[in-house]
Image (cartoon, rainbow, N blue to C red; front, side, top):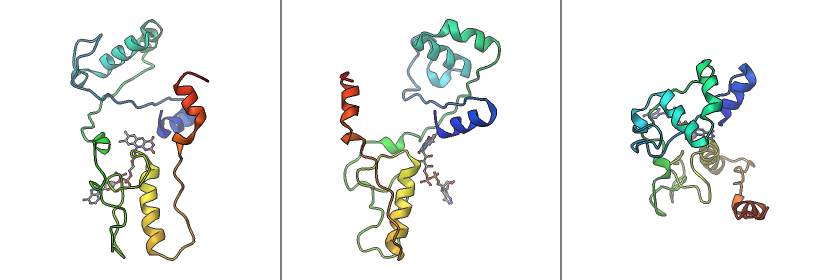
Length: 157
Ligand SMILES: Cc1cc2nc3c(=O)[nH]c(=O)nc-3n(C[C@H](O)[C@H](O)[C@H](O)COP(=O)(O)OP(=O)(O)OC[C@H]3O[C@@H](n4cnc5c(N)ncnc54)[C@H](O)[C@@H]3O)c2cc1C
């Protein structure tokens, strides 16, 4: 669930998650259609089938309490395309004194794309470098240093 969903729930009692399918052109296991050709209802049907909650969800659907609105986002995964060092420009290219690259396609070492923080870090890097300020760029959360996380992944909690 994203932050929008959380705020929405707190404000209005609605729960608004968003999810996306990485392979919209594959035929479903339950609904024998490509996801890209499915209605919102059919997408929910396929989802509930995989989660094994069809029986529980059917009365909720019948009561009109759940809704799925499909949206095609053809570029949403472009941030995750394979890349090599040097494919993306540094936030502050070498020699630049007043020009920076911002956003998800600039290179921020050790950071993870698809977050607002990534873009914010770019902007902070640019502004704090070009202007005299004592402010520091937000530190990057180093999740891969969490031993506890490895324990959970390997089933040794
Ligand atoms: C469905 C979805 C859910 C997401 N959920 C989360 C989440 O829960 N948490 C999270 O951290 N991140 C989330 N993200 C990612 C996050 O939204 C982006 O990483 C972030 O918004 C990028 O910020 P940005 O300012 O770099 O670019 P953008 O927010 O894309 O802003 C770029 C702006 O430039 C404008 N623009 C483009 N071209 C021109 C032009 N030629 N002239 C003038 N203006 C132009 C655009 O209209 C846009 O307003 C989500 C993204 C999507 C698509």
